[in-house]
Image (tube, rainbow, N blue to C red):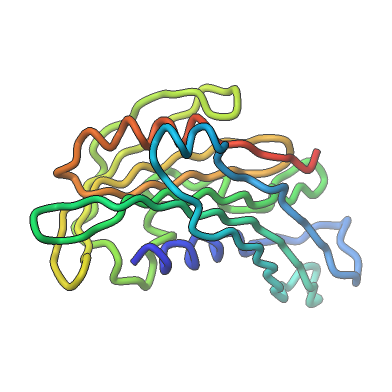
Length: 211
């Protein structure tokens, strides 16, 4: 489930361009700066880095009646820690993604920045069987990358080891130095105290911007 989340979240950075007089026949390239979680935050929350990945996405779009090629490069970092719910071995997962704003003539053409939280989560899970019975529960505010950020919390159901488990999903998105930085955390709802670890991880996000 969590690996599918990573893959689909990367795809949300695909570009939805409208016509723009500044476009030429050349490929437009946008690269996000690396986003990750500090070592101190990982140690405090007891999460471990599982993988870091860079994904370059090419897409042909139509603009001004002509095909244009756009290339976006995103960075993804995935962290996990083991959690036990009854007899089911599950994991708490935190994923941090940086995707370029892709500004053209002062306007961001990356749809990730304008999606409401529910739509963003639905886009992340579109076509996947990772989440079911998703409902938005609440919001909270915390500091991420030096800015006040809204964390949206969802209730959902997923499967671990073939067993259905109720999970809590935390989603945060901030704009930072030319990129959108997204944090996604998933853990079993029974472990309510895991929110503290999620906040530590989100608060420990670091980002090398492109501005």
